[in-house]
Length: 625
Image (cartoon, rainbow, N blue to C red; front, side, top):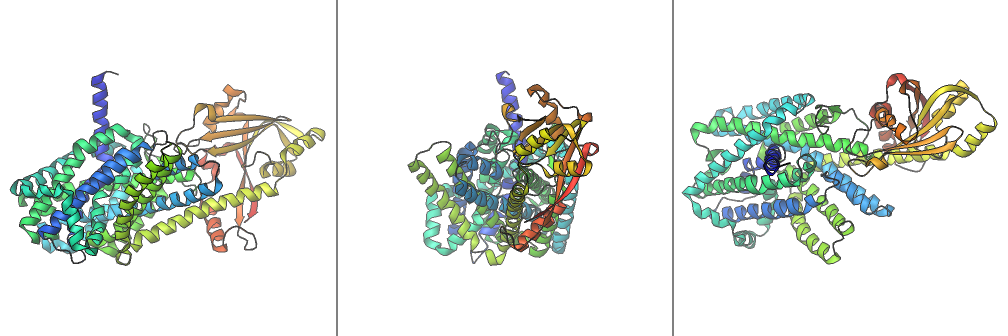
């Protein structure tokens, strides 16, 4: 590829990153300054304006630029990013320590659970803040803001099933227009009061803390709104790569955001009464309605990014064993990452509408927003530091210094938002705890089921030897038994032999393993073990970002000495019926019942592994946990 082609490809990827990655952080000027300078008795005085602008600027430099773009994005899991990919990377770094793996899993799952809170509040606050521009243009339409927002959000989620392939091509150009417009609006106001640029000096932020004390600490809960979407930089790394994301941020997005924030600050210095909506009051009256329309489109794009992220993270959680199996619909033939998860979509829609109807304004929602964002940021930092120490082999001193620097900032933001729990911060916490309980219950429940199956099963090798001594009737063809235990006799095999009195000519015990890497290497995908008596052990391995397609994987087994004719192959599977038993050790009875409910409603393993229904025999089995 020539230098010119490389540059064109880099520019195209950077444009795509502007559309997908930066939608959330790019729409944060709609509400950040308004929220920070009007809450908890704060007034838009020159001192507070300069102080808050300084905090916003340096938060974007330290948290977004230095922490995420420079540090966190180094922790790529074979090119993939996001908290689940980072969790898998951290777990690999402590592979031999079961206790540390358990602790890291708990931390990572809770961070992922908070991401769903972000997925609920981002569409609600973004679209709501855009529609609130109507109050500036036509105050008498105030009562229509919530209904209009609800309608926009309903159509946004209804369109998810059609995928983002076509709409995605428009994302980049629309967001480029958005960033250019907000930069020009800000620059125009800065030209009237260029002294506002002196707020870049961090002394103003420090002085703001000395003069305002606890009130300044509370203001951090508003400042963090300028960082919303920073997690998307890392989560979408696999789609665009590090270089395009970094290029888009430093050369285009960051300058546009700084100009708009400082432009709003310049406006407030001249007109403090504009604090009710400084973003839209930057806009000339003749352009107000077009700007409201552009803001609505931009916030829909920002919402689309976080919704797609929730879909991707759910698929990764299913593959890693932290979520029940759900139907996944691919919406693009070219890009495997473009997926639609109906259950998650419906869940988010209900929660988003509930948030809009309950809180009613972006100002009220801002208290709920910060906790989800700062909680995920803090956990991401902790996991990345573990990776830096264990996999990058940083010195203990370097990890401690980096940890003190980044975690002090993270915990400051988190602490400022925890104060707002009673004012709305409870919403993402309750949602995150609920998702956390569901994910950990599913993980623990599957462990108990596998343990019970192993304990109650027969040893395989004596069974094969007994078959050789007392051979049953053998029928032509291959039987594939899905099992989690290669050393035990699958229940489906015993039931088939007991009830049908026959055994297939060739019997394959198939185990599917999901790896802690996004994509399995070719040399680790297939492992075959000959067990004697025409019995074979077969292990198929997939990465957590792949779709486990068993028939396709079996077609590749011929190269390693185990050919399959799908028309002559029958799949046997035991479908477990979970019975909650309080007398058995494991989980609390209510969690046993929750797991049993999820197991009944989960997508069958056969559909998840894409096994054709006309080649499948399912046999029931009861498992008590």
